[in-house]
Length: 385
Image (cartoon, rainbow, N blue to C red; front, side, top):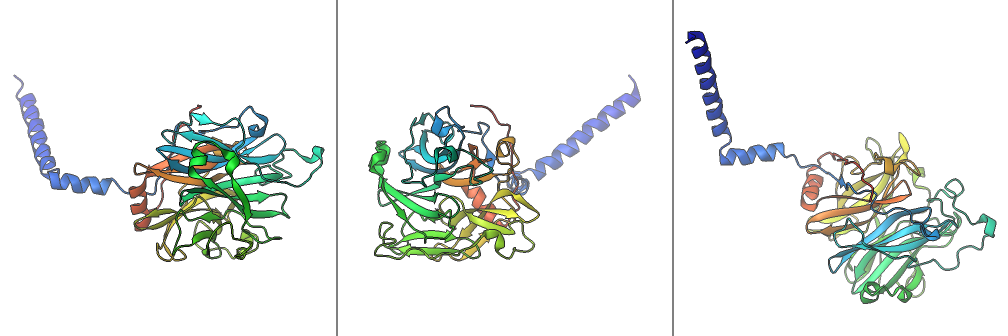
């Protein structure tokens, strides 16, 4: 037997023994747990569904150009979406779809569930889809970008009532939850106009519960967080005043220096109540790349929601996938978010054309937001439905 070979084999076995002993000591149960905590860094992560886009433009004329920017809620274990649909005539209407799991939507109505009343009386040849003439998603009029909450057994939906840039006001409609579940969309109450005339206002959201006995409307996140309180939605503009909100183009505001969200645009989905505060998503752009809408996140104080507690140091969702650029480039635009079995689902429009979803464990997300962790985006290949 080769003596040198025996020595090398014994040395190798001894090395394995030493390494195994060290690793065994290092990875005793307490140390293994600590190592896992160190290596498993909590990050602000949204993981896109491999089924994105989860909804696409349809074959019917009223959905032919685009479906985008959905409101979302969960009732009886199903996720319900109200989404903006743009037709061949350039009109934005609201469509409906629902899902048993929040990803696969097996119920989608073939007709719009809400149509804005009396859009401007344009001539027939003027009524067409045009992202050049009408940069608000290519639509010349109708109801845009819904947000949905349930308060005291009623569905409330806020949306942009758009009839040209000289008529852009925030409106609300509502109905009983049982009528909504029955699909009786003839029961909508409203619309109730919330914003003042001759002002360009967009993207107001309701808190999902009353605060101090009043409806709370988040109507501005820049230049500061502003919330209006009213006894009822129906009384706004009659017995209670219309909401006085900041007026002017958001990009006219002084840019925030040294941060990614130099220009904060508007709120995204309605606030989500957590034990740590109200979770708010918002849309913003960076002045060095103003054509890309990105999604930010912050936590507001539960008792005083005008008080910001934490804000993500970077966007939590950026338009990096092809379906977020194949249409109007550089757009992720979230209008709905729900929590299902501890998982956060954020529903958004991609490229003003399709509907997508991204998810993350809620508690992990909140922990990262509170600790100030930089977001890390996870992308997964798109798969056609």
